[in-house]
Image 1 (cartoon, rainbow, N blue to C red):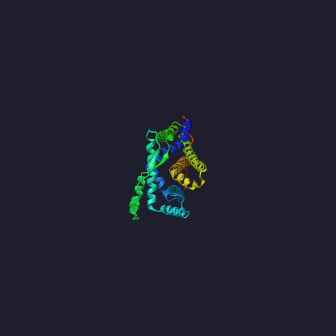
Image 2 (image 1 turned 90 degrees about the vertical axis):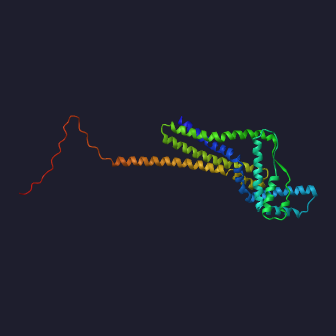
Image 3 (image 1 turned 120 degrees about the vertical axis):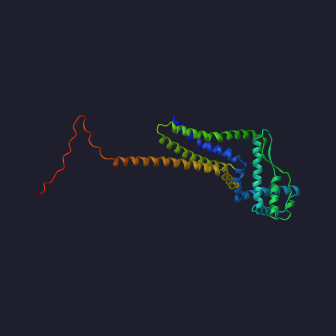
Length: 307
């Protein structure tokens, strides 16, 4: 029974860490924005933003005013690349991520079947305020148009809601069940020291398995991208989102190995103390048979002296 309980605990440990990361890391807007904030300075992400926004601006301009002069294209991209080095860009990055995450989470908690969109007017308002604070000329004239960008189609909401509710439950109960099973397995074991060592090594193995799964998922995600030029930016986003999960895998590995090593060291020290005590113990005297007279102790010999 102890072996079965400990095996189940070690099996649930990496899945519990994964569910807790998804339930409490990805679904929290503040943690999500904090994790994505450093990407504003990533060169691959900047290049992806310049390419995406530049292509959209040039497409709209061509649709409204006809074919553009070839010299306009590098000018637009250079202007966008310069903008990605400003504080206003970082403000827009954080505001956009916050608005998009808030819209998605609101849709997951809502029962309406509707397309998930985000309004860019609040983002533009924060960017304009930053430009005004930087004393940019004519910054107060930046328009605040209510432009909505589609994030998720309505057909995918039902599946996402079911997955979100499952993760919400699993993120709390799976880690708790893993800990309870481990403690119970150690408590009912015939040799608790051996059971504790097995649980610690199983936890370390679960942490290593989780880290391997993260690396494999990263490789598969980047391989399946339709546009291979976006791989550096996608890799940066994936690494930023899974940073906490990778830390959890290393934590499980370190804790498991540390506990196993501590149990082994305490057993080694205990055995060494027992050996030293046996060596230092005095040799016991032969036992006297029951009813026998004790052996008289001979008097000390005296050397005759002179008178």
